[in-house]
Amino acid sequence: MAEKNSRRNPTTDALFDAILSLETREECYNFFEDLCTVKEISDMAQRLEAAKLLLDGSTYDQIVKAVEISTATISRINRCIQYGSGGYRATIEKVRQTQP
Image 1 (cartoon, rainbow, N blue to C red):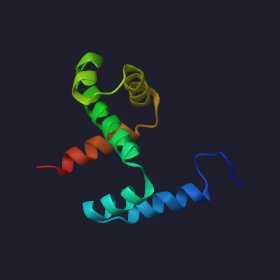
Image 2 (image 1 turned 120 degrees about the vertical axis):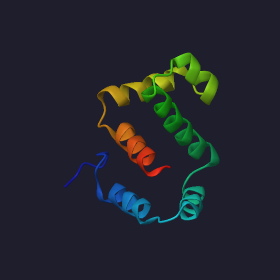
Image 3 (image 1 turned 135 degrees about the horizontal axis):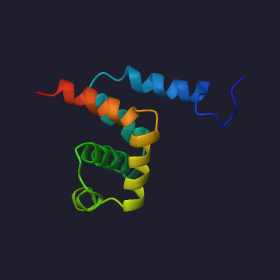
Image 4 (image 1 turned 90 degrees about the vertical axis):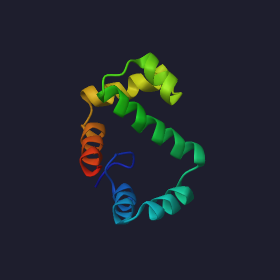
């Protein structure tokens, strides 16, 4: 049985299954507006934008000005990009491939 604080557990699986069931942007807005605070959604969106900019070669100063996010958060995102599981890079590339 998984540890209570493990990243992978039935409760987290259920959350990800719910997210994977969303089919439209409107469904995403409805679900995430119920699930998260406005600030949490904004923070996640800022992190994703900062990751895109890092992958495109922007400097920390450029990202701070463009996204209004702290250098500490940018550093954390950069560590995830460099040493993490590849989630930012894979997801950003996947989305970019689907855009015209």
